[in-house]
Image (cartoon, rainbow, N blue to C red; front, top):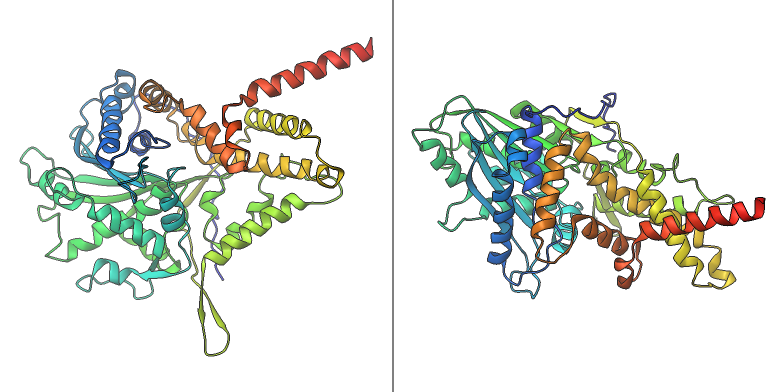
Length: 461
């Protein structure tokens, strides 16, 4: 049974310091590569990729952003977009990756996008495919010496394969482009290659960093023959476990490893059983279980148990199924950052959902579940906030995040703001009808509060 959890005391959120130090620069580019999040306007992969490239270009040339991250960054490769359904009427980003280089920082960054809320492929194939594992030896090839027991999830392996097979308009893969960059006479020496990503990118970036490090031992794959890169690092945030305990132990012995996660974020609790077991009650200090029973905890517990089952491999033996623990663990150091419950979002959706349910005049048999449904909805919405928006301030990049959001809002081909996309995702996750995505839950909650205050004053007088 997996027993590894972070033993570190949570650190305080980072304070923003402009210009940004290295870590905050890396997290900024980790954000930019997610420009395709929620975009549904395009019917071709090339058009979607052009949009992502446009947003990245605007970010890299924006004065507010360059004041934070520096102005000498160049796009060395990408961004490249992969969609599992490139012929669909509405093509969505399933994976995205890019490489940037700064001579002044002596730093190359490979940024990998996280899960797109609209990507069923990303969710089902790469995020949730943990029942089977793939040996790390088979990933890097037999010319590289690695621990025999090290394995990654089938989902991580699938994502890594998609990233490594990406090609730009010249037919260059990431590895070819990296080799070409290092071959240029103007490229410095003593370089650090930092691989970063959030969420799904937080699982794929450690695997990519380790892969790039390992294949230097294979003369047919070595991209660093010049030895200009002397440090390879991984900077995952909010990532679930990419592999098993042997992989987690091996990873930080090969690459410089810095992993951050929000203590109130559900996603990085996967796929360790001990971590997943904390999920059902993660917000109980803020979302009080309904008096007389705890169906909300039961519901969430069922979901967490299902997640645990997905991390086990079940095969048929001669008579009965054989259940194998894949022993997923987070590599260390796995550093927690103290999270803060978002009371504003909680109030908005709590009151909004309650008001809508109240207008339905549910039968007595169903009305008893209204408060339970509301609490589960509050949990889901809080989970979404803690996995996304909360990291902007926690990682010390609020200025860049704010400017990035403005760029997205001013160029969104669907005519939506980022807040509206988050709201649409929340309504979808809660299970409310699609017509409710247009409701302003904030205004509903405010009106209910004002009406309640007026009513109270009238009664008091």
